[in-house]
Image (tube, rainbow, N blue to C red; front, side, top):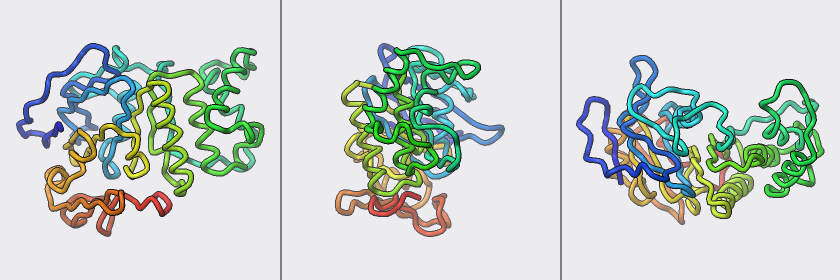
Length: 293
């Protein structure tokens, strides 16, 4: 396990970074907005085909990490390589799945049209798809099991169905790296499990790399080889058994935090008045049996 320190502290020795063949490489990376440091001295290598879960409370810099990988946010210090080069906007080798947000019921767009934007959304105007591109859209719809509602208005579909279409949109370009920003948010247990399985299965079958931002690690426990937990400018990276422990969480939050495992799920509980946890009550990763917060 690798643990990052608070700004100004002396970092622990880090393992040597492999600069050859990695999917993602952070090298003592620091990101901040003005005087506020989101995270600092982040050194992390993600190998091709790895599924990495990114955890932490609201405002800890999880989405900012994805923005850095997409070339939308510049680091304040340190280095970052994505698929062997400096991050850049519009990299076709990267797919992106946003947090679920419902469409207006009257949006005049079919599910198939939404997926098609993954092929021609970068073009000016509203040109149609070529036969080859239409074939790619059809294959992406099959891959996520969305053929039966592909021609229905997207605003009339359930949240889980809409999220399947967003995944198809992200995969239609055959990416090597898939970035997922809270894709399980606002989904019930059934759809959380389906979406996690869909992305995990894609990673295993295609050897594609996944960076999966989530508040709840439990739905992706079967797929994530490692996790990164970020909070208060600090971070820790390793397996779930290494990072999600009472000792590591207490160190990251700077206050007593207890990690317990109950019937195969992980719960993190702390003193909300002193630990920096983002809820008024003791914080826990949501129970998979309840709707995601």
